[in-house]
Image 1 (cartoon, rainbow, N blue to C red):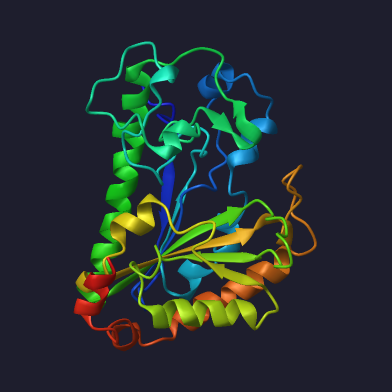
Image 2 (tube, rainbow, N blue to C red; image 1 turned 45 degrees about the vertical axis):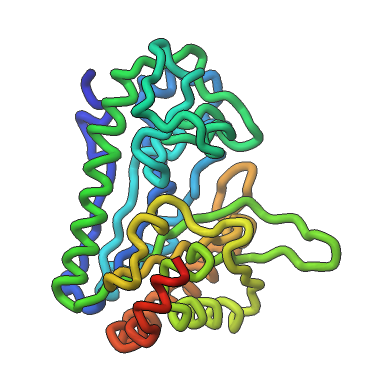
Length: 298
């Protein structure tokens, strides 16, 4: 099956003119290029199909390459392919053919309709009119998913080679969280898989930058970090990974996806975050926690 992105790039690596720090920024869910074939397969209108997007997150972090760190961003949308899942995390009800034991068909994400190929978008709206073929899944996973992760691994390997350490910032947005009891809802959620994927001193610094701007920050609840954070975050091997979730209401209308009056302020705050991280001696800071302690935490 010919790729739906045969005539355009499915994703893009934006590199700095000169790599100045061991940072890698990844925006896997902000893609907004919807193939015509895919749109013909969905029962949703053009706005509903976009409800799973981390809309504009790549633009919020767009200054990273200008400041000296690469940015990997998807052009394909999350509703089409989710690279923040295992490669073969598939819902058997979505396919014409039966799925063998080699596929992960029983994960909580599959049960929620949010596998590597999602069954639903936000508010549990089904995406497809008809069932898919495994050839379609292979086209997306072998042709786009695996090259995407190869590109991400290459960026992390380059950082390790140049600096001896790497820090992956996995960039996401989240629906506005409603207040529970007397506790205010967070504006930012930082995910480090409960302290196992990133040196605590780095997470502390990121939290401080957000709280100093008046934002409420939570850690690991309700988002502890997805597949990329869990897979690449290996502090004992010099690779740290931190997922950042930004509440969408801060910078856009969650219904229309239009940028709101807060967009420029959020982007300026993230510019300060990027600048602060690039200015750190990450080699010294990330190595401040003993590896044996980190391994015990895992």
